[in-house]
Length: 302
Image (cartoon, rainbow, N blue to C red):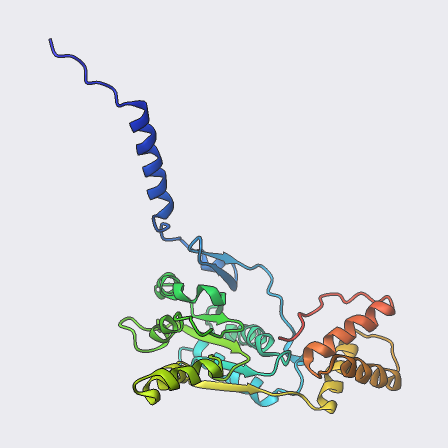
């Protein structure tokens, strides 16, 4: 008579269970079924491989962005052409802090989505990817490639440190990879650096490379992947005061022009900077002192 097979030892069962759990943890997440109609904006969570819808985007109205008329028109025109299926460029918005770089990206997205319904086009989607997740761009692109929408992939404050090689992933996605950037995706980034890399990093490459010119060229060529470069520079005193006045008028804050000018200039002087962000911070202060709530307040320009 054949005896029944022996049961696995308890220690072996526990070991196999731990191995199975570990394999499940390291396995890549199953592809997400994204409902792109759920919202017009999403945030990419690379650790979960998921796009999270954003019901309400934290943005500034286009009319409140002062002193950047030329860059505003250029980005809106580029975005509108892309939404209509026409040739358009990846865009790099670089320059002074607090002058509205990321605010302009979000405002342009809203402006275009208010325009294209008249053309019978679906809404343009805005997808934010965090700087530290740039290496996961291929996975994000795979989710969007076959979708019946067009997407702006937006990375705020993009830059790379000396030991960071993830910029190579971005180069391959923007141009040059086998698959490349999907036809329905465009990439917008903001940065304080025109070339996205610190100057000392580029100098180190030049001094240690066998062919210094080629080493530096590889770094600089990342910025070349952006066909549209839009520079943001420190604003003049008049532009700063126009920003302050625009916010005050928008929120109907009762303050006379002389007091407004004096206080706004003093506020900028104590902070050593004039910018859209500084203007908004002053307006928050004066509204608080006067007990006026800022309903539907915009985000500070970035």
